[in-house]
Length: 196
Image (cartoon, rainbow, N blue to C red; front, top):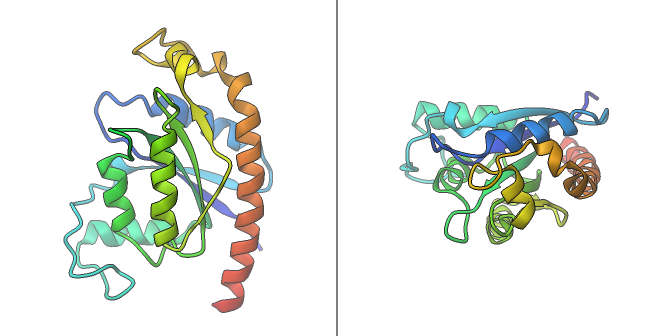
């Protein structure tokens, strides 16, 4: 069996988003592992319309070609890490829309998260976990939270430093999250193979 593929989903699509900096740090550090493959999935690249299908694709095929492209992309992954910005105590609108645009492709796959913002996107990550349960995903306990003073060290709102300045603080959480992600990816991939 090939190595499991993990999609790192960038949830913010704003022109002035901060996401690119932590996304690169996350990808570079995740790729140091030899048990999983990682790929960035930027929601900007998918041009998803607002969800307007008669029902989720669990009940009938989606009609919008961009939604179908998104679903086909997700189907090729065994698990996901969501890079979560927190807007008004929740996930971004584009991320909620992207979650709604698929269903079958999320089922029985682990959902990890790295959040950033004033409180490390803790409230948004918790909201994401609730959505993941409804999509029949496996939300992970461990997450990476870039918040407070550490966030201000690397954010343009603060000192706009390099991610290297907060690496030592974030790395233990990242290692714990990736270890858990590897375990659940293996378990869910094996179970999915038995039922295919």
